[in-house]
Length: 494
Picture: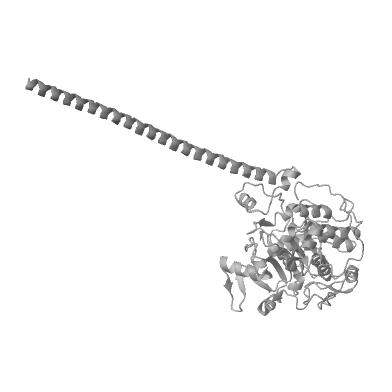
């Protein structure tokens, strides 16, 4: 009986143990199932996230690629609206151009002589119309609030009018008022005295890096002075980024370029400061008989002696400049400057209203010149009294009005009544003279964004204080009724 009882207890304990094991097994299976399900879900989320990131990256890359393709297409589009969207001074444009994705500008062969050693340098051209030219250097200020001289001087409207009437002996404003800035070191003054043939360029406010010219013959190396005009900001930038050597006389060199430092910049606007060596090359280097100016962003790839032979000596010219790629009409060029925010729009309008009031007509095929608008990045000159006078008059307009020198060139030609002869060569030849490099950084000044004259009046700090539409004496006419001629855009961008 007792044995049966023990067997019964043992049997119940065994069954209880078996049930507990079964329960534990079921719980274990359930737990394992949950873990397996969570693991599966986690893997699924990870795969989905990876796919989402990859898909987003692909879409983003396709979007960037599409934008780049649109940029390339717009820069070369024949449709004016899309071509106007292209910023050819941007870093993106420069990168695409360097990588070869953009079609280079239209170039054509320059009919130059092949051997610089065989070129015969002619005698100096005879002085015509103007035999003696001198400059006003003392600034007789008419504005009592102006404590220091202006670089361009306080030229009156009567003096300006008189300067366009050619006489054998003339004395005109031509920058460089005494004590007004652009001071050259004595060692550089001594160096440039020996320069009869000059290739000049300039870098201001560190917008460009030096570019060495190529294809220079041994004869040109010995004949020409290669002069790079810089301000203090640019000189410091060049020293930090480029190897600068110093000669025994203290002169500073970057490759073939002799650096010429101009201290105390005369204007608030760096672009206007850059016009001084560009237009007044004959004032900076008074001993020069011939000069070739190229902008700082350009790399010269043609021997300078061949350029003088082609553009001056062959047809007995004394001044040569390229025709603008897009525009012939000054008013169309002004409209393009406003659209591209190259200067304050109301001040460009004021500039053009004065020219319109003074009789400048839009260009047409009946005018004696192929265009009223040049590409001013390359200027080739023999420094005669007449070409020097033209440069002075051109600079005076840039000093008085806007720094956009292309707007003033045709006006000065018009005021001289066809007496100033020059060679305006095709733009395709212009594109064959150099390799164009992008600026290091974008230029921007607050005045470029001004839309109305009222905005400028409310914010006088935007207006330049030392030049440009200062109108030191009020313009002697009512311009309110002047209507600018309508502009029909003839170019795809401009």
